[in-house]
Image (cartoon, rainbow, N blue to C red; front, side, top):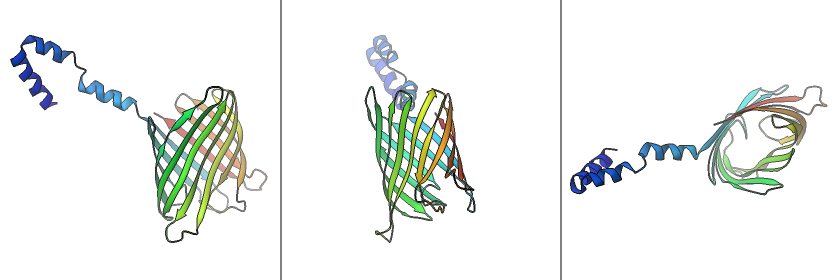
Length: 217
């Protein structure tokens, strides 16, 4: 700001009041900074897992998006005490059927370390929606050890503020007798806040329950 003020003063001396008037028509730097901040969108989510005969844990995720750029950080997603950082490219289109796709590249570190290729995507047509995210994790030190993580949802929304449907997940974060876990869920939205409850393997005597809360800002 000091350099801009010095330059403006010099112009005023040389060019007179006409230069001062021209300087006053320029947009303030603070307004430009505020506009740049508006271009970013953020979200913070936490998924709380209640797992029978295993450790209950929380899985937080933070995302930041600006135009095509997607940044994401996760913890306890690939494994417990494990974090991952991602960069992706946002794509979207469609009218009658709206679609979004974000291919991503990530690094995984902690209890499990490796390099991951992933995606996030969705299809929406009126009240019906499908979303999915997945990743192939290549473990450091053992390139033959590759695991595919996946979380998918098929939802029906009777109203804008609530939805229900089917969900599947494939994970190594905790032990399960089933390679792909299947379940039911119901979700609710109020302004920037979204919450959902998932019950995986509901036919088991002790199903896995996941409570999710997401806020956008």
